[in-house]
Length: 286
Image (cartoon, rainbow, N blue to C red; front, side, top):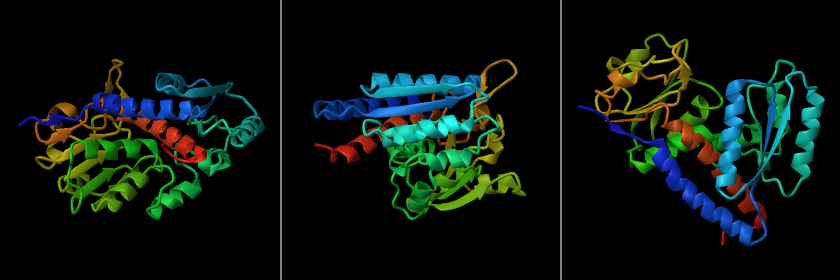
């Protein structure tokens, strides 16, 4: 048995075509969807992520603003810029690239973004709305995972879903979305005593813990859908996920690759949230 590949690049291309059409419709009405990105520091990975997000905006016919600050920037400067962007009616989404330098209170920065422009979905108000089942913006990575499951018509009602990782960015919102879709959800983490016991029960297994090849084939239920959110760089420079792809693909029914799986979908759903914000501000789709 060899699992079917769930290709994030291919699905992302389909969704981005639709987003480009929605962006063009907004532009025709005099509204250009705009995403503002703030980067503080010189983290190489963060720089790549920001560049990819800006490029994706431009390809979709959207406008992007990019503010880059040195690692020793005074937080007051960044807070002032966020306030300006909040007040600018032509900016629809604001994203502060994490992690931030040590002088920042990251949560305070995220809370400074207007909830109506928080296209990452990290503001406490938006997290609360997600918890209540009425999300304004869905965090981009979990949103992408849900679109991937939808694309393959993976049965969610009554399914056993296990998430490895409890971060505010992926694990917790992922649990809320799967719960709302009818899954029975288990969240595993560093204190979980017998991880394999839980993962082997999963019809849907989401790995989002940041440890290379942690989930091996023997830990997977035959035929399960395996979503690998992790992206890790090995000593030889190659990228891999939190799942040992070679052993897992012989057991799983559906599996995402790394790279080319969840990663492209994360940026795609960021574009979707920004266009959604622009549509709301302009009075909806036509």
